[in-house]
Image (tube, rainbow, N blue to C red):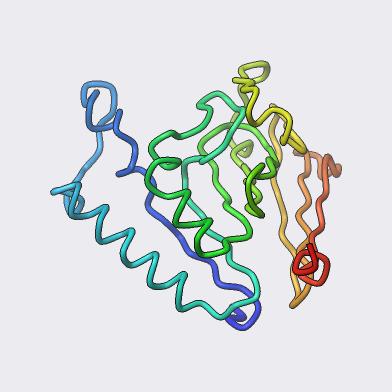
Length: 184
């Protein structure tokens, strides 16, 4: 894309989730290339750390399937909090984007600049199936349990995120500026 402006890192989050390995009768995956899991995850984290550390882009986005923080049906992914979150914080990641939960949401980090964005409302919605959690409910900037989508527009200094319903109506927008952000 524009490496001097943004680097976008895609992370295979499924192998981090313990329950997929602990409850194999409920989850069927082809783990070819992932086993041994411990080695795969160590390599993934080492490579991600190196790439994040080498990034000179003004904006760093990380994209994974599973949410790190979510008020949706699945809630927080504790395995990602345990293994991935500190790496994102140490490397000044601005945004973590995910799907998995069938909702749209924007959660601000309480202990750093990371913004958590979920755009999983494209295929179906779990209306009313939410998992409010005291520690992130207060930092939830937006939550919509219906169908919709999200757009991202950016330049060197600004990012604008817009959440829409299926009819294209704006539900929530959020802007951040590196000029303002760096002064905070």
